[in-house]
Image (cartoon, rainbow, N blue to C red; front, side):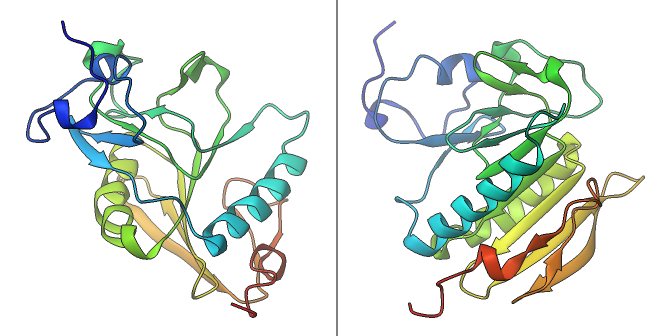
Length: 204
């Protein structure tokens, strides 16, 4: 089999597995959504990166020496229907790279990343990826069993918090903004000061 060293060698209409994904050797960052290649947005802008770093700092401090672990992109998360047990690479057709994710089950972690749904995923929106995050990933994360999903809007300085209900659908638990204290449903002892997450944004 020929080595895949350029994205142009792939057929964007074809379906691929995570086993295929692992063999690719090009520079572009992509995700797989149910076998289809999804191009990642260009390098995140300053607001995105500031929000990501500020949230990463809070979560890293909170989860230090705890069972749950936090990971930041780039970090492969392999997803599939939550009713299935852990799958082999050739059976997995979805791999995403959330901006931040928290994983409490160490069995899901291996050398390649996370095999199965994280407990909590945070996506920080850029202007070019609203549709992908709001539609594709929203449905995908619910189907896969991600218990809590946050959408962070840097330009609006707000957070939408979704929690998986018993029927396997997301419910909008809370909308936070400005200097609110955002509290994860899964970790009620953690309060995140959004004024610190969105600090220094007013000058841009």
